Amino acid sequence: MMAQTNILDFRAPVNESADDALRGVWKDFIGSVAGIGKGIYHSDIEMNSVLNHNLVLVHSLLMNTSHYRELVNSSFRRLTRTKNWGWKAVYEDELGKTGLFSVYKNAPVPLHDHPGTRGAMMVVEGEVEVERFTLKEEYRRRNESGLVELQRCDKKVLKPYDVTWFGPDQCNVHGMQALTEQCVMLKVQLLQMKAERSWYFPVFSFEQDQEVLSARRIVSRYL
Image (cartoon, rainbow, N blue to C red; front, top):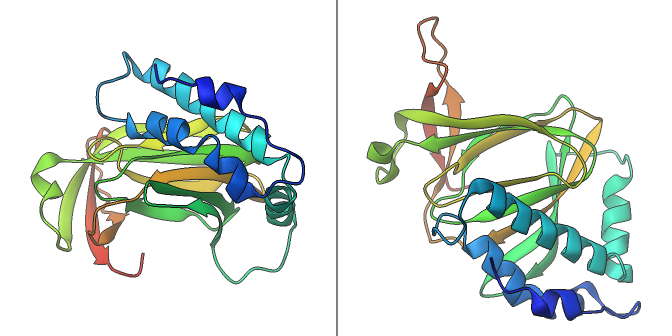
């Protein structure tokens, strides 16, 4: 378990900015995310518990700040949108970044990756279905478009305060679709190595193994 004394002892004044509030918890908090895939957790259940505790706590502390509260409230408003998903940055430094990620009904986010990094997301409002895969090892070092195989991790429906995560090698490919008109998530991600990210578009077959998905990988510097 990660040390959490600083997190539990921290109190954010009402008039403090979101940036200032995060400085009080950031290193301990980012440490729990950095532990994904490093073997410091005894099980996925323990890891999910720690990530959930920290994300709920950070969200609760930040809701005491007017800046973050306004970001959350503006994310909840059903405004005319020009994109299939939205991102509102909250904080970023040399360790990582955090922000609010919004997805919308009937606008699914295709399967995509986060090369070499770790991250976690917690639903703040709405419901979302998240499908996670692990890119098979023989394809990880090939930074090129083409057919690949993905090993299924899981497919879950997440409700408020439920958490999902991705690691550098495990469950690093995911896609999602909102089941409500809008779903807002608090997302935390370590800074990733300089590598082009990719989209993954399934190639369906009647004979396809349910646990292994064939997909066409499209490397994209614009993702």
